[in-house]
Image 1 (spheres, rainbow, N blue to C red):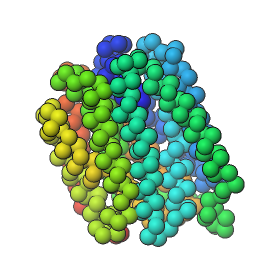
Image 2: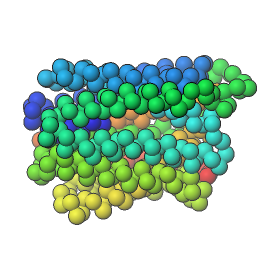
Image 3: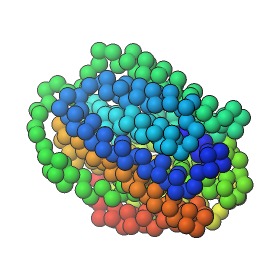
Image 4: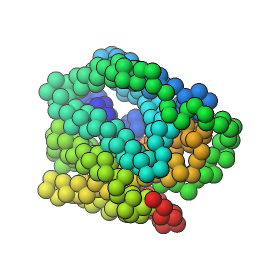
Length: 361
C-alpha cells in the first residue's frame, strides 16, 4: 500500500500513463496464481510459518526499491511484493476458521479484517506526505523494515502454537471442482469486491491529484479515512451479522458501494467527498468478513485453505483485471474518473446476484 500511496508522485516523476498504473494493478494476477497453490499446500500441511514466509518475502522485495528508476523496475518490485502477499489471505483466514466456530467466527473474521486494514490505513495515510517531503522511496523502505519486525514478532507470539482444529480433523481429498461448487454463488461478488477496493485505492487519489489539483498527501489521507472507517465497523461485524444476517449486509454494502463510486466520479470538494467515503467505508467493508463467513459455512475445515485460496484469487483477479481495464479507458479519455463509472456498473451487476443469497446469520 505504501507504493500505491505514492503513485500520484510517480506519475509525474516517471511519466507514467494511466495504463501503466493499470498494469501495476494487474500484477495482482501473480498473487492469484501463487495463493491458490499456497491454499492447497495449507490443506495438506498447515504451518504457522507460512505467514512469516510471506511477510519476509514482502520485506525483501522492498530492498529492490532503491534501485528502481523506471516503469520496468517498478513492475518487477510489484511482482515480488505480490508473491509475498500471496501467503497472507488464504493462510490467515483459514487459520481463523480453524480456531473459531459458531457465533464467534463472524466476530473473529471482523477483527481480522479490521486489524489487516490498520496497516493499510497507516501506510496510505502517511506515505503520501513522506513521499512529498523525502522522496517516494522513503516510505517504501520504512515499511520494509516494519515488515521485518512483524516477522520477528509473529514468530515470537505464535511460538509453540498449533491451530486448534488441526489435530483430529479427518483429511479428505476434495476436488477443486467440488470446492468451487460450494462457493460459486459468491464468486462474482468476491471478484467485484476486490475490484471496488483496488479501483478506489489506485484511482481515487490519482483522480483528485491529476484532475482537481489536490496534493498527494491530502488525497491519500482522504482515502485512508475511508479505510479507517471501514476498519472500525469491521470490529463490530459479529454483532451486525447476528442482527441483520450476512446476506442483508452484503446487499446493502454493494448497493451503497455502487452509489458511492458513481458520486465520486463527479465530486471533488472535500466536504462532499468525506461524508460519502465515511458511509461507503462504514458499510462496504463489512462485506469482506460477510463473504468469508458465507464461504466458511459452505465448506469443510479440511478444504478451507483451497476455498479461501480460490476466493482471494477471485478477489485479487477481479481487482487486477478491472484496474488494468480502467487504466486503459482512463488513458483513452484522459480522465481517471471513468474508472468509477466502470466500477459502479460492475458493482450493480454483483448486487443483483446477491439478491438470491439466503439471509443466514
